[in-house]
Length: 389
Image (cartoon, rainbow, N blue to C red; front, side):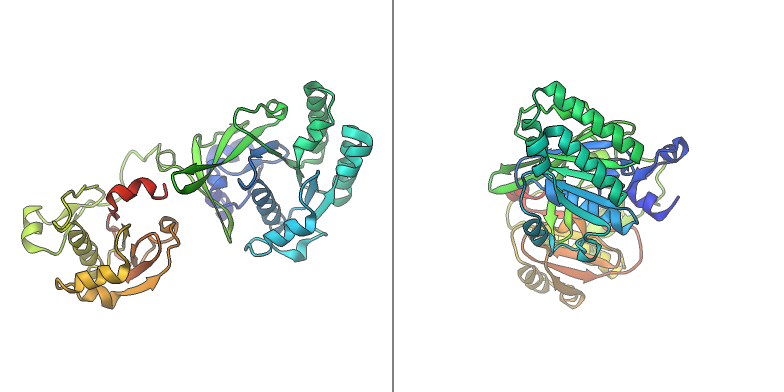
């Protein structure tokens, strides 16, 4: 199995059945689809404005041409190409050198306005064949729907489009705006449906992705959080579905993990058992934070990496508090780092241990030794506002 297949989560069954995949290389999207999109299939990408449809489609297109493919991006009454590309330039996947030879942008609205769906279909056929496209994206399917006489005629247009792209072996993404409760005729005609959403949870804006339909393969169901950053779209699948099928036998030797407090470790027969989860409760001022720091610092001394999440105190304040009770080597092991309110995806790395709040963080130097220290969370009432990871 290739490294790309492993990263995408392509299973042995997919390889045995000979299903060819288009690996999107969008962080964790290929994990949700169990290996990537099926080559030659068509997918609807739905969502309200600002939910990330255009970013996701362009990210897939740029990643596809980097892997040797060719992409055609057709717009219908959407933002101008120059404006769209200007908004993407700061993202790491963007590469202007592949435009227009490998990634070609074209507007299809004039053909749609003059000749209707038939004119649009003919234009897409000609352009896709001329550029030998292996990925086709049509952005603005709501405009095409307006030119259909009925839902049935629109489905016929989709059927003709699918017949053509199947012959060409071209994977297709159809982008359309979506409002809650709205029914899209294309949902029954395409092979898969991805719905993006954007909603408010208290003061926090939340983007999510759902794979509502995915023919020909299994996928991870439910809502998965979406983040838009300089990397483009990054998806954070729900933890419970990632580990829904644990291995029958654990591979890690269970060991005791000490706090570095002799009488406490003695009463716990050497410390907490690795792989376990322990809740520490108490009123303010009873020492919960200091005990958590003791636990992590002892792990750092033994070369075991770990992570600490905090929502109240800044890292300098935490280190000052630790130094005042004899944990001065916490400062000597630490270096400042920025977490930008979403530290969970990149902080629990080998040879590091991290203290962080929603605004900043500190990494402590650790070693290669395993097992890792269990993550400690400190936040109380603030935890309901924390990012779900």
